[in-house]
Image 1 (cartoon, rainbow, N blue to C red):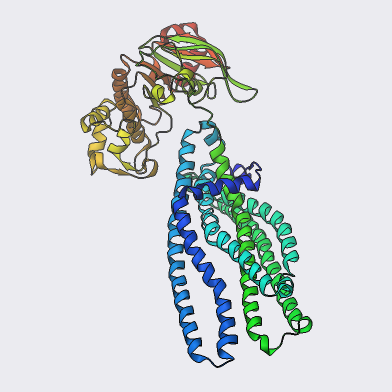
Image 2: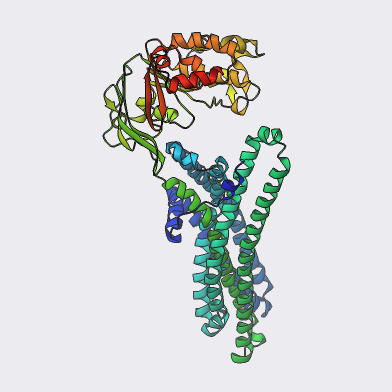
Length: 589
């Protein structure tokens, strides 16, 4: 496995925190009615919290000290009712917010997944699958607490903070100012720790992504690991990645914990200053016990939201890296997309033309250079040549999996860029080297490209490629459940099913890219008879390394050095004794 590429940290575009936070809040504001309802609940809860210290002050100064027990019990009963209502409403608020944030997370995940479907092969070719999964699952999940606490923590605590400050200033300005002595220390600590924390949490997210990518690749390639007895090397790489993951988390948490220490120091300093001011400067005595108790309660109410707001800000920084990673994917422009004025591709006959086509996967490394050819409807074209010559690239451009950099690709005279991608691919049948099968029944896998296909159509397609017999030998036949990637079937059987899936759509242009590479010679002879029937009346492009499979093609293109080096049928090219002749002779030896 390419452990080095997995361990390479992804570059995340740097975006202003305010922009990322604004985008997150945009999801919250889609639930305005719910938030308004929660705000009314929180207004009641905050109001009760603010009244409680006044009730305590009144109980001490107005009832306990004078000995008015009856009045005190009435006051206590009222306080109990208020606080029981507060507890019940807090439970309702938590349930409502949890339900809302889960809906938001589901929405974000669906948007990310939907956008991934629009991205071209370049995106997936350049990133391990595990890193993509990390963004869709882990990073999106990390946003839940931020979204929920914005309403549960930020808004009520901010209101509480302002209200408590106003009440304290009204009751005793000097005590209020003394109680806020620790604020400058808190603010300074907040800014210092924030910059350190954000960088460390970005590193942690990258290391978590690397670990996830390695696990996915190792499990997917477990047969290769065991074949080459590479368990020891794999374990060493895993240990290194988990160590990096642990260390990055420890470094990030260590900075976060420092913020709690700053809060504790600031709170302690403020309480000491408040008590010193009360006793030594204002000379408050036993007759002001109610005021001191109430003021101490308000000071606790002041510093509690300050701590909560600080922790919430810290939490935002903690999860901001996850939000940036999610939004970076969502902001990627699809490499291939329909233009503004695209048309629907009409029913085609299958004429294909390349006009001076040039293409490269990497800048400065051309794969095709000024390639031109014309294919008549119904022709069968075989593409042969050395590995990496550009055979698959040709059919990828016809399917518009990539766009040409220069020149044009025309189908029935229509530039493939001028028609919608869906209407183009609906008339193509593409069988690739990777016979990918999904989890589900055999019938569902074959029906994948044509959801409305009847059982009879599915079975007919399987008969054409000689897959019906082996399917019927399975215990459940077409209802046999397949595991991921068709586990339990041979490579040849999987290729037969993928071929049946391609044929079922009755395409006007058929592309077979190494369609029989995993089939044994006996089965291949039977499949070739089915393919011969399928090829009639439709334009076909066949890529094969076993040249015996393409001898009956109408024309054979030998691709080399970015162009068509030779062209003709089997007999003509063998007579030339050129590249095609050499390839044939090499396979006979």
